[in-house]
Image (cartoon, rainbow, N blue to C red; front, side):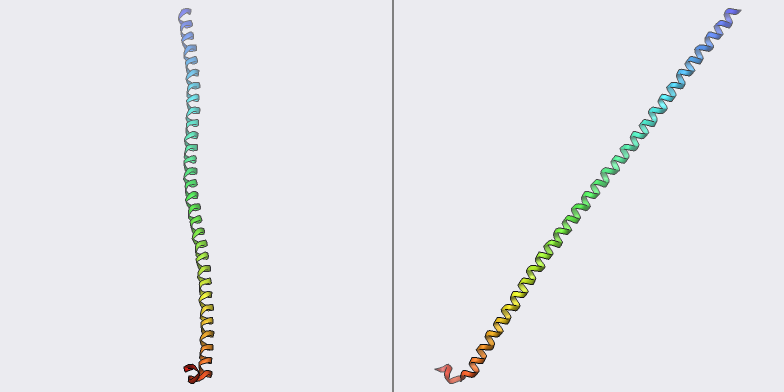
Length: 115
């Protein structure tokens, strides 16, 4: 029954060939899965990167707003300082004027004022 042994031999080789093809297919699928996982990981990293960029933008805007507020405060403080200085100068001038008037009044006497 050499024909039967040959038949079995052919079946065996066919199965080995199919087994080899299946192993290659499994390896290919494993590689595809690995690439998909890598892609998912990179998408997750990119999503995190976008979140961080948004947070950084918000922080930058907040710090810019704070800088503007501080600058406005400086401008306002400087304006108040100038106003205060002007009030002090005006008060000083008024006091000098009042003192001169009092001095003139006290030295002139009532009769000179009446004419």
